[in-house]
Amino acid sequence: MTQEIELDLTGDVCPFTFVKTKLQLEQLESGDLLTVIFDHAPAVENVPKSVTNEGHTVLGIDKVADKLWKVRIQKA
Picture 1 (cartoon, helix red, strand yellow):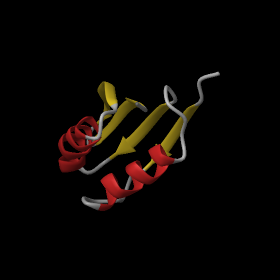
Picture 2 (cartoon, helix red, strand yellow):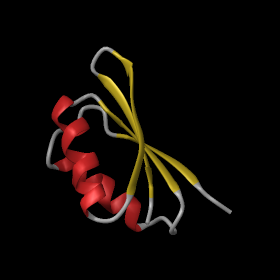
Picture 3 (cartoon, helix red, strand yellow):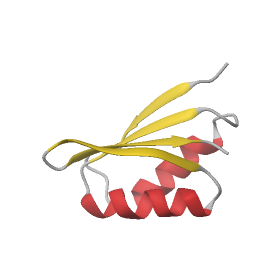
Picture 4 (cartoon, helix red, strand yellow):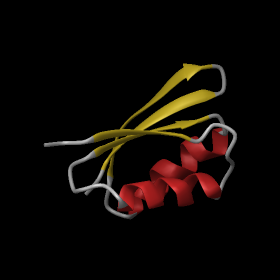
């Protein structure tokens, strides 16, 4: 059964956004979904690149408000 987790990182900046995302992904099983919420624009570019480099899949990046994004990641 696939698990879906949401991680709110509003207020956090790079590189902490990637570190916290990576730590959360390590706790998930392969195929699980992680939605990460950012308000730090560089994180919206950097975190998806970094998790892709680690073999995970970015399913989508949605701007949900001014300076607020949701990034959906599927663990490899």
